[in-house]
Image (tube, rainbow, N blue to C red):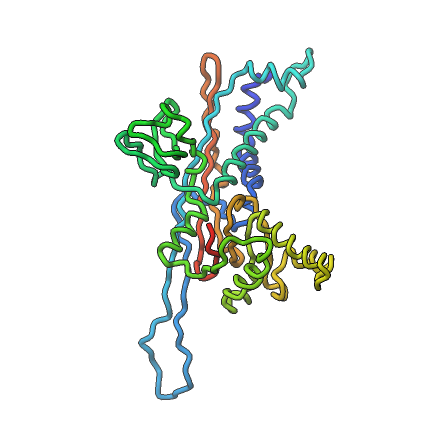
Length: 363
């Protein structure tokens, strides 16, 4: 029996849902840059232990101690479910993709059709998650719109539209009663920013609470001072025990900051300084004079941020759910003229141990 276009889409999602979700995760740059936990379905404690000091000279008269072993601490990874609703109209498919690839006498749809449809949606979902992962916020923390309130630029609200609960950020000062619908020019939709609390949001909270204390005073890093600030100030601020951790320390920064630093290396070389092309090739990805203990990695999810983060392996965590049985396409509902389905993805972020990371003082 020949498959219809909708049947092909639904059948592929039902059979290959794990592949679709896996491709979304693999398409996320941030999932490749962080330690990825793939089976997070409920809040999970990330345990740490701070051992107490206790070494002393040998004393044969002492056989017991009242000193503790240390302190256990935990940080919580809290998964949040994001969704994308799809309303699929057969005519849209038949008049576009299918009409180009399906011959007049064909019985079945081409095998590539459903895979292509879901791959493109997967790419878009991955881009939305990746682009909002750093400064993302939890939807639970956004207050409902109050018609009596005057909002200023940057204020965020939850507002119910014909699409259900949506999230908006003011781009200008509003007057009382000016809603995202009545005055769209003063608001922007931030649904994708409210999928989960991002690393940048977590870092800002921990700095405010004085829990993240490894903060280097660099100011806005420029090409002229990039080596002094990153290879000098920030590297010097890292405790020696952290520098000697297995795998060393990795500096994460935007591609723009990475390019500034490389440009500084090249300017020194062009001015007749010490650096050669071989030196630039080495030091563009390594902190100078770190003896390989300091690595540099540009990441896409820090785009637009002046933040530089240093940390050790597996300290920054992303959680999701890719277990068998976690089918996000469990239902396809047929209507008179269309078919509806839903994509669901779990995301969450956390820092395992604040002692093993640091940042500069620019968000």
